[in-house]
Length: 200
Image 1 (cartoon, helix red, strand yellow):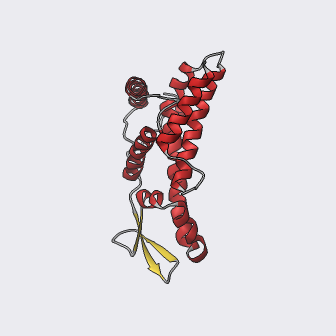
Image 2 (cartoon, one colour):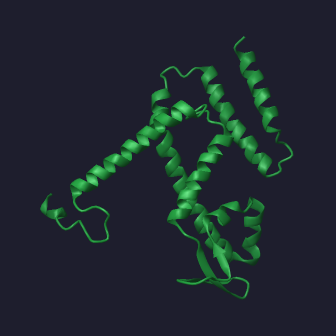
Image 3 (cartoon, one colour):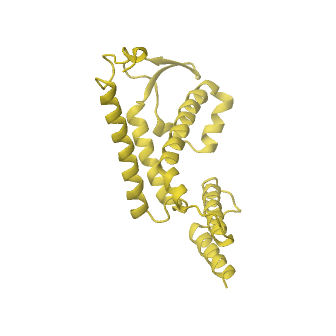
């Protein structure tokens, strides 16, 4: 250990030496690598063409983990939009990631006019989780994607990837009650028919 890092270990840390830290960090990388391999063997379409349903279930797991690391916060409510965070005890308002992400786009947006402070607190939770979710997903799929890429990424492969993107957008449109969206099964059947047609 260099002189500069001699005092890096503190009582609050979970490791006793930098060697111990290195072992634990490497173990974490090994765990991620093993999980990527398990995902590739057991999740259909992983990583580029995983279904929206499977991805949502995985992300739900990310959300549970986030909630474990970021417990609900309690606030005392004064008036309709003054919230004072409490360090202990139960408050009038409780906000956690499950509540924040459970709000629909309409419900969340409607708060901005009458309860901007309340919406701002919820937005902080939403944005924090979105960043965490993105980091988790990128970590899970990064290496597997690099292995599946080819130099000659043909038109058919490109269209398959495009279909996955369009399916996700259609699912989002359905959630927002967009009248132009179609049913999940209808979309999949139509896109599959299209893929078959372009290979004839």
